[in-house]
Image (cartoon, rainbow over all chains, first blue to last red; front, side, top):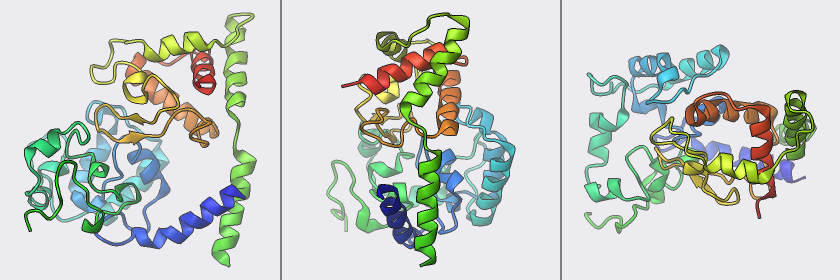
Length: 156
Length: 134
């Protein structure tokens, strides 16, 4: 019964994940379990298709970690990422594509002072959920924003 | 209605396939006993294993670096800062229920933190420690 309720709740919540430049509604389950365990399931639009191809080609040495997946999962994830990729290529020259240095990401986060990134509760710009409280469900809207040590909208 | 049926099917299949933590404890213990006759999983050994600094990964030196000393506490990824659900199945009920998931994370984390695959005995001790945590 508990499982049924959880499943129903998950289904009911599903359509809400679609909006506000977060995770697309058709995100494969493997994207959350394989790519969203150690870090947030990052919105695919944060990188361009060419970036994602490079990232997926180097999963066995993914930022120092072997994050490789089986061939079938790999193909499904790559197809999803290519389909949902953004147009913004990551800044070139880095060994692995990093959306955190991309122009769009930097601009969107320009109001975040350096001390916030260094805050032990945040640890860095890939810890989306530290401030975006809906990140685990793929939501990044401003209504769910809570930046540690910062009253949001203080600069508005 | 279609959604409800789908959810029902999902719920039933989850119940059919879900294993219990003691299933994993028994399976790994039996495997360990093949090479160590009379093997019995030991929580103290598991605790020592979990907190040991293996000197393999600078940022992820031990299990406890991310999972904390107490399996009942939620953990935190030492590199990304992402919250990790508590290991204890009495806190996080989905823990040690899916064989593929259990093997996947032992494989990945052992390679990364211990620098090799973990033995069945080490896995059994670890699970004994985790499920016995108060």
